[in-house]
Image 1 (tube, rainbow, N blue to C red):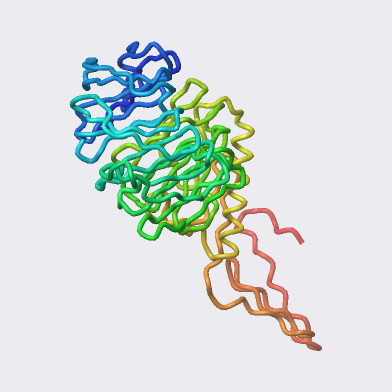
Image 2 (cartoon, helix red, strand yellow):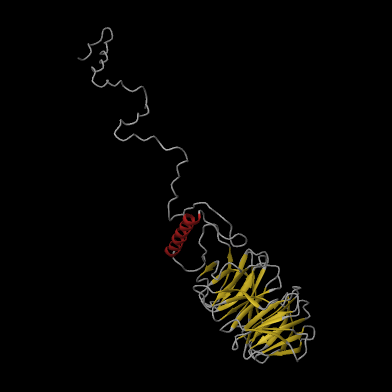
Length: 401
């Protein structure tokens, strides 16, 4: 939900489940559809909710889950729904290879956008402009549409960026960048002002990209979910590899991910019938899933590997550092892994080295321990006099000789 207090999930049996984002408990379960619910979206005004299912039907909901209207939008399963900036219209895409622009008040289709060679996997309306982006499944292309133009020239541009079906796409809050995720395990960021790819990302263990979203405050950071259940964090302009990755975050495909409006929590939903809430790991802690059934030995192994990599980075670069901003801050402290390693020994303070004995000469004098050292006999002279024996006290036994 836009306020960040609740999370709405949709299921294969047509149910809505409302979760509390503070206590992580479910609040309401509602039988919303008779078919699997593919997508649901909230209007910008946070007053309306639209859901769509596999039968091609869409439903209007108030925020108290009062169903006001329903209509048959497509003849095939609907894959995506997106509101216009004014909430007066919304766009839908389906497996029938069409994109439809609906009037929200009348619940009737005004325009049908044709141009994809197969099913349309995703659609999203620009946050401020009259531009609609869509991703194709069979044709593997991204198309930009202007819904205001008539039937002659509705497609503004066709982008051939991926070698597999385009499963997800998302507009950046700056309005200039569009990130797309594909079945070819790649993510690409495109600047719509030049229609050129400015950043391409492929992870070392990435699978089919199933979902993607931008961070609500840092416009360089975006997060993706893959078909193997992993979640990766990426930074535009910081290389093609992920900045951080949680492998095995889910046991199945990560269908959808969303950030909290404050940017400190991330929620993910998967085919394993679970949703998980994620937060930033503490400095020096290994990013991991505390709810999965992973043994402590595996966690210990990951922590040892992370500590070893940090030690190597500190030796080579003079300190352990990470990118500042949302995902990390610089740090040069030498830290030990709790329970797995001992803290590093203290270093000697800088100063002059201790005196060394010259080669072939006498050793250096030692410091006194509790009194003056005994006198030494000079070389070649008589021995030093012995101290007199102790005298016996009056009336006592004679001293030993």
